[in-house]
Length: 186
Image 1 (tube, rainbow, N blue to C red):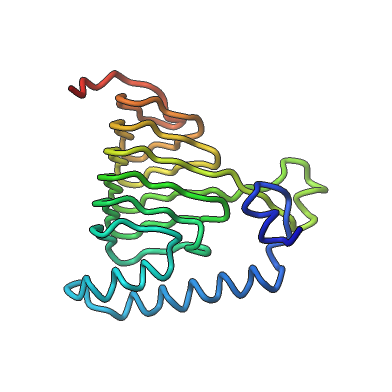
Image 2: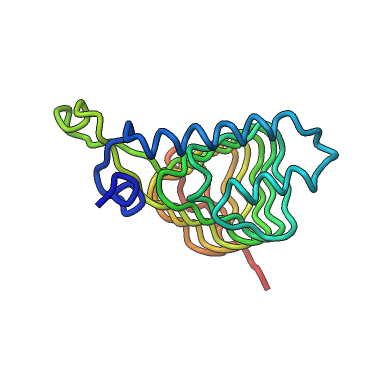
């Protein structure tokens, strides 16, 4: 099994593997191109994102500055939006639903490390996938941790640190992020 296959399957892997290093460098080259394209040239920008991501909708908008590890593990939904300074560590798959809104400085982090010092010091790491359902709004500065699923129609408050799954149709906020109230979504 290759290190890339291990990485995507959530197993311990070596991030310094040559194939993975090439993948990160390729993503950074595409991200540099994106930064150079003016925001009003959305067709050109979408073309680069379609090359970078595993999948996108036809209509979406991602503001500068956007950062990711590989891009090829990101599945970006139709009409989804990311405001300024979005970061996605896409070591494992990240699924962004339709009509998702990410406020400024949202961080989506699939990457993680062993808790045991000896294993952590080996340099190996692993990841857990993240899934964000349709019609979700994530507030400014929120951090979505590895392995989290956010249910459709939910809202995550600004500055929240989401460490556990969030059910559909709720407002959740805080550090750690907790259920606040249900949202009536007819």
